[in-house]
Amino acid sequence: PNKLKQIDEETYKYASQSHEKIIDSGWEVAKKTAFPNGNDEDAPIPDFGLGQNILKDILRDGHQYSGDMTNKLPAEGTERIKQILYPTEKVLGVEYCPLLPNVITILLTNMTESYAYATIRTIVQKQSLDIVVGNGTKMHFLAISKLE
Image (cartoon, rainbow, N blue to C red; front, side):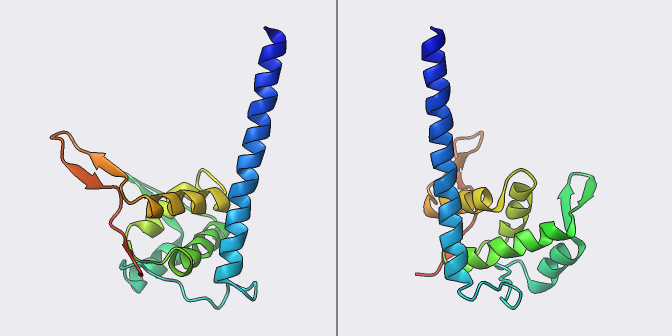
């Protein structure tokens, strides 16, 4: 039994490391595609229908709104948000999704850029991810419009 447990733990660790490498590799490809010169400073920041003024407020103030509390994001947090927004438009083809900057902000409070991007990519690719509300009505997780 101890030997089997050890084998299971080693298998899980190996699979997790492989999965992490795949996610990190996908993120690196997305960044290289979106920023071929390696510089994201001059890249325009897409607002996804949110409006440039509101987006700039979010990025400038670095706020994440949570109920009645406002949590200030560190400066590097707003840079991380910008790094994901541009590849989401250029690589994934998303042109409209007003909640996306807020979703990315929430994701980045709990995970790395590569995992946040992988999560957004999964949501975009599987727009069939529906939420079923109490009366059985299906609703899309996020309103997304993609470039074709």
